[in-house]
Length: 581
Image 1 (cartoon, helix red, strand yellow):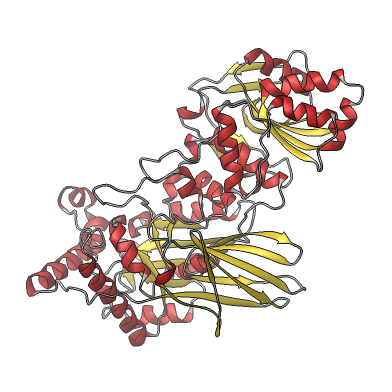
Image 2 (cartoon, helix red, strand yellow):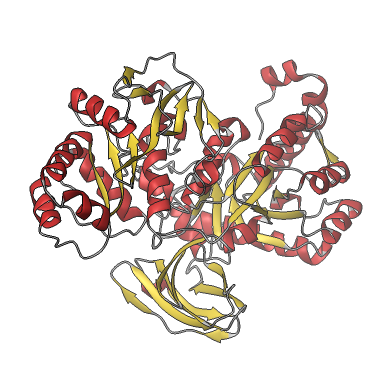
């Protein structure tokens, strides 16, 4: 990577670091010296601005052996727009071989970008996806128009390209016409990353890194689950009929997790229980709060949070004992509300992770969440206990596709009212998800969490794996034995009680801000790794006096009146009068 001291070069280095790619930053003069002196030991992947690349090409062509060295020493190049528009234009014409090629400013009416599926293996899950970018993509960007067939448009608007695959002397050059590179250290005020605000600064460089570097961090598979919040397990809940929904899952290839309110543990219908028990590949349930009262996990009172957590898990165990329906030990926060204290308490329970839309806590002074945090497989800022992020369908197929490009699981959330049109919008969305490049593995929410990790091959037969939840399914899909080096972020090693792989207890070591342990798997062998933390050292403080019990019961029944009757028959009345959740 040529280092011109610009902020964009620093951003490039951060993105490379995020994917675990080693970076050698050199000045343009250093790179030219090493290049001419033939001191480059292996083929390089070059990142630089169009200003520097233009000057580099001039130097290459002045040297008698410059072209030969270029071909021998460079694997490919990623070029982004510099500050010199004239150099950018001359470079575009040189690379396309079209003296009439033009660069036009993007305008704010530019819409409907298309990510090409014409470069095999390059754009991954994003290939073939169309999206409507926000105005944030327009500034400092250009549209390249060329009449030659040399260029392959990777991201285009109409006939113009904003990201292209070109060639210089037989070496592939990926050419971005935007000046911006995504800043992974930037704080996200909403806690939610929307790729529509960052198409040109994010998609090109991520796609190139995944294509150019075999040793980058990546997810071994793409997992998905649809989560429906709140329903009681009765034949119908609002617009959701569980028997009919099962037929839809079978026809359209998806699975559903019900975020189940533990307060309802005695209220499940035997017929629906049987449906869940007989179809575990389709239906699963997770833990949705405790009583689902307002901000119940937004408290800073650790004793109260302890009681809530223990009560929720005790009720889920009673429900499982009563019905035989296994529950995923994953917490879905009611209304998305949580505190730092809640994450710390939940880590010391049997829960393996949390799943949530929101990533910013409700504390008076919440932790800052950055782009890097939400790009990760799960947000790990809170006591090293993960928040796996989920999205609504209205956030767009492009956001789910970009999440998958990063290695994140696709967790979709709806409420029963999204099925009010006979599930037409939902099925259309699921069908579009299933047509994305790269096979989606629809699983229970617990399986999605326990199979979510990122990995890279260190040496032949040696895999490094980063673990996020407190449970991880590790698989060796090859015909040869493999050694796995597993790491997990952990700042408080004293909290760990033990680590098991199946029935085997593993030794581990602490280094810096992470723990490391190793295991060997035979060919085609798999195992589940579990990290057990010391239990909460609090007795918990109950708030369940008679008044609380009555208010909670009224809240739950009013919610069901709203969902089963009012929303179905009087939606305008509900919007004015019912605010219960």
